[in-house]
Image (cartoon, rainbow, N blue to C red; front, side):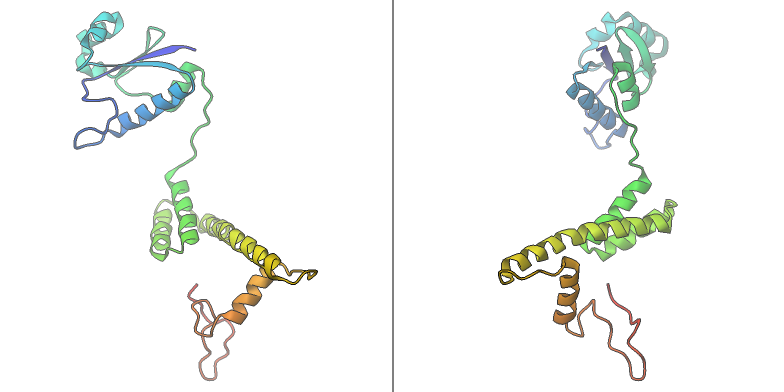
Length: 218
């Protein structure tokens, strides 16, 4: 595997989280370096403020600093050859230079909002759901995609409840009895146990008005 040398500008540290302002580009690059090193990559980093001799000993870096100054930093060398100057690379660029396989990220802002909508459904958080639906709309997420996120979250949320009812029925039913399906039991229990004023029960019909289609809080 090829080796990479990173010549950083003068920094108090290489993480990007020191001081008042966080340098997000540096934070991301530090995470990418750790990812590559976990896969066996050889990456050395040099800080101009702490290791000036490394900059003086590299002919390519020394020449760049003499011609353009610190604007040339950060500078990356792969097997001694300059491949990038003036900015930090992306993870995709790192993986190409090192011969590592990495799938491109699909976790966009829109995907993040769909995940948040699903999490709001699972956690029963009304303010969260309202907020993230509004944010998703701002990002152009379709109502159809939001409904898919809601439906999937609801299915995931109901699965452990059905499994728990299955277990309870197996433990409590008389020997030899044939247990009903979980969904049937859930419906029967909800209808039998919920009082008329329960939050998810149909609202009481007003005088002369049919109860069918009454609103539900949930």
